Length: 221
Image (spheres, rainbow, N blue to C red):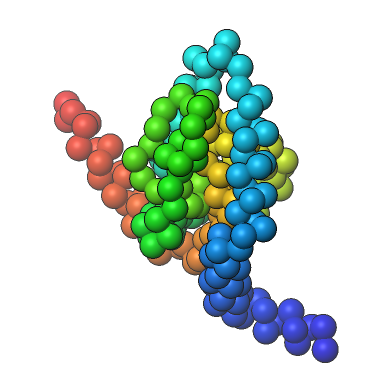
């Protein structure tokens, strides 16, 4: 029986994970409408943001962009250059899904950021897009998950990095705690979904295109 269940899951893993992702998104949308969750979100945000230390502002400005999709595209490029082609492609798939899902949710939910409705919020910059979910957190957890499934030794360091990114988004005053928690959960499911893709054809095409690109810079003697 257990073998049959495992076989059923393996054959439909991507579909099952997608359904779970939609379910998690629905759960968090319901939480955002809950008065108790709303109160906890505000209270927890104020406690974390109150830890602000102006002497770390320069460092905070640097770390504020860690985990952005620009950051992960640089990581993808580096992985590709050092020969980790499969990891680069899986990470690319995860980040593209993250951009599509996270970007859509932001404007569907249209949640205001903390500094837009609270006074005296400590922040290093003020993003113009809506708050939920935290894109930096979502992308970081998606990356940690998809890369962790391809190399187990990356799970702990990348998970730690993702947690630091998520905490920082609250500390910097740009996200509510539920934005970060939601981004983390959604990101994990995105990473799991991305890891189920078959990439042989895509890898072949990308490597072929890369070789043509490199050869275009070669000079014939």
